[in-house]
Image (tube, rainbow, N blue to C red):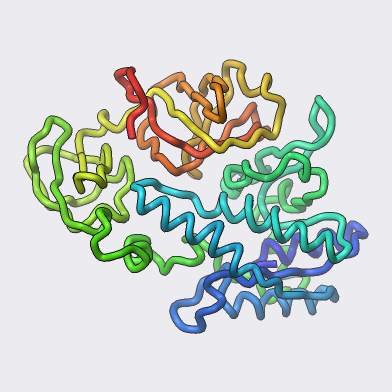
Length: 362
């Protein structure tokens, strides 16, 4: 229970279905700080809200110390990835290595048979037997993209009561139940980073002489020097904003080059890729269902998805070839694969495959 409306209503629905339920709130990295702006998902007030919701539902509530594993698997990984000019997705890491990892194991030690969350995703029976993950009924709230790392062996012991409900209905249910969290704001940013301060958060955890913190050249992909930047931290592939240079039209980040401290920019078409190479994948369906034409690849949380062809290479590499060119394929981000509404699995993007062919860049 995060303290928000979704997890509180999820607990209520499980109670109504006859389950024995206990609320658990994870103590994460940002709980150690009492100061700073409130964060709707995991500040100290969120813990108090979760406890109030648990009391209103008549269920026990506990705070589980996950600070060490969260810092190691999520925060340190976040900093390391940005330090190597990659764009990580900490929500994927948290779900994979915290919520459905150590938290799940702790629940088992406490005698509970399953873990439930307020994620908007559906768990349904699949043709080959067992359970699979599917997009939520409310597509605007669907969170299946950040759950591709969930262990396949644990799906049948994970409950997602909100997968078939729209968010507006969830809020109405919470208000009817008298839950204080019914109108609580939703978390929109990374929970452990102050709003809009990704670069500063990473910079203060790197040495002053780290290449990502050093000023360098801004170059057009045709080689022309356009100006200087103050540091590569915070820049991402496909990003468009004022670079302090003019005369070349709209420019987008095409590549980050820490070794030379160079920010490469170009026109939008220069950000296009015909596919990607991914690693550290996790399959939630048989491989033969992934390697068929027409599978949909999502390369960002809000990406609409693109038809593709997936090839499993030797080792752990996946080659994903798009049916059309796609922009802003960012190393470090996730690619999630779908067949219709079913989540087939996902992996971490290693490098884009350039539109003009040839070897992957990055």
